[in-house]
Each structure stands twice: as C-alpha cells, then as structure tokens.
Image (tube, rainbow, N blue to C red):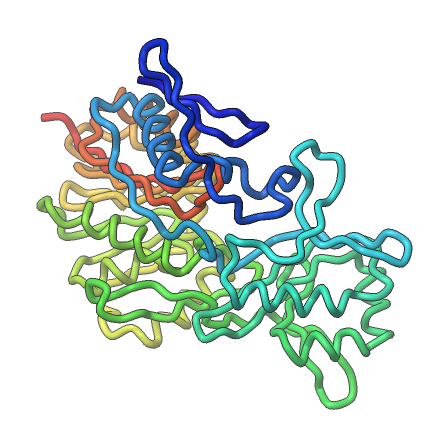
Length: 398
C-alpha cells in the first residue's frame, strides 16, 4: 500500500495494488491556503499528516519501526505570529509571503492561531502604522492573555512614529511593546515615549512537578519560546518520560534557553547543569528561578557552546546530556564529544530538534561514536505544516 496526493484537488489517493481509492479531502479551514506559505499540507487529512511525518523520520533516522506521534492540536495552537507589514499606496498587507514568493499574502485571520492571538492581530490590522512602508512584526499572547508586539522597523520609521505619537499611544494601550533588534521596551514617562532596556515578561509557561503546576517563563516578546502552550506541554512530557527510565540522576543541558526543560527536570529531583549563551534568555531564566522552589537542583552557566574552549569536564559517567540546539544542530559539539574516551562520554543523550535534516546528520555522527537510538517520538507542534518537533534518546552501545 502507498499514498499519493493531488495538490490541485487535495484528494488523497490510496493505492492497493492496481486499484486507486480516493480518500476524503481534509476540511479546508483557510481561505488563503492555496497561496499562503504558512501551511503546506492542510489539504491532507490530519491523521495522514502524522503518519507521513513518522514515515519520514523512519527513513531519515534509519529506524526499524515507525516512531510514535503526539499532537499539540490541529488548529488554534500558536501563541505567537511573525509576519511582514507592507504599505502599498493607501492600502496595506499584513502576512506571509506566497508559496511562489511573488509577494505578501494578506492574512485577516488564521486557523492555526489561538483565538486570542487572532484578536490581537485583528486589532493591529484595524490600526495599521502610519508612515511605515515595510517592516517585520511579531505578535505574542501570554497564558494570562496579555498582548505583546515586537516592531522591527527602520530607524527612520521608528523616529517618525515617535514624532507622530498617536499611533504608538493606541498600540501601547493594548500591547506591551518592544522595538528593534535589542528588544527595547517602549514606555510613556508622562510626557513622551522612550525606549528602555529589555524587560522580561511571563510570556510562556512550562509544566513542573510532573505536570501538576505551571511555572511562568520570563522572556522578551522577540525571544525564543516554543510555538504554543499545549504543544509545549506534550513536548516537555515526552522529554521527562525519556529522562526517567534509566539510572541517570544528573543532567547536563546544552542550549537551555529560558529553562523550558531545566525547571521540569529539576522539579522531579534531578540535578541540572544548564548552559546557554544568550544574555537576555538568562536574564529571563533568573526571573523564573525566583519563583522556583528547588533552586538547589540547578546550576547555570553562560557559555558559547560552539567555542573550542568548552570545558569537557561538564560530562561525567553519571550525567545524561540533553540538547535542544538551533536548526544548525550540534556542529562542533560532535567533535568535542569525540575527543572524550568512551568511558567519559555521556551514557544517555536526549536530543530535541524541530529540523530533521540537522537531527539526522547529528544522529548518524553520534552512531559513529558508539551511540544507538532506543526511543523516538514526534511532537506535532506544527499541524498543517511539513515541520515537526522530534525527541530522540540515544544510549551508548554495550
């Protein structure tokens, strides 16, 4: 049996020998799906999307069996949206580029956005920035339904908006506002608008104590978090499950960010040494740490993990290794692990990745060092798209 899809009609073709059966088309939830690049596979029934993602991992990772899949939701799962604003004469567009990269596709509402996020988007659409010709925008919501907006406009446009004042006042009344690559916070001091240093806010949460409680994670609007609240709970749950059925008591966590995995592990009694290079992420981490009861279980280190100066003594025979690297993967960390004797290498590695290409490359490189996959799970945080979050556990061969 094999599968095929007609992109023009969205029908699934299921082949049994020489017979073809036409499966029901997925209910189309989006009027701009055919042109918008945000979702690539909405025409495929969701259950089949999960099967296809599992089958791709099966092939790319060289697995013997298809991996399990868990879902963060089919629709309304995103808590943040990055898009482009463009003014064309008296009109404007808010959206993503088209599948053909021919221009922006205007987004009114989006079915994969949380309802509250769609409301924030609608407010911004109804109050477009004057003067600005083009720029990048991120809109984010918090678990408490706070609205945040990050504006990446040219310096000239930012100055013009400060001089105009009215639009910033309208937006600042509804949103927490950040401006520019340094995530400066916009405030009104009683007489004028000004930008101050970044102020982390509890834009996200992570489950602790085995999912019994949610710990606020402090970050900037422009900072990194997972794409949505429900999908992240599934992701953390999977990582915790992979961490527990072995003899590991201490974890070294690389690329720890704002503590999305650090706090859940430490809440269960594990000792965690977390490494991160991003200064703003660590400022937010320290703010989150203030409300965490088991502080003694956590050590925090600021370090560039791609530097050849990384101290390999961070690994020990009693430490597992948890990594959630950027899309580029582990890169030089693979060669650093290779420098260690087999006795000094971490006995267990949990690898979290949203990019199957670099994950597959790193997994095959680790196999050359004597590691083998013993658990894999796909966490579908990106329904209707070709992307997926993967959690892979590797152990040293006996």
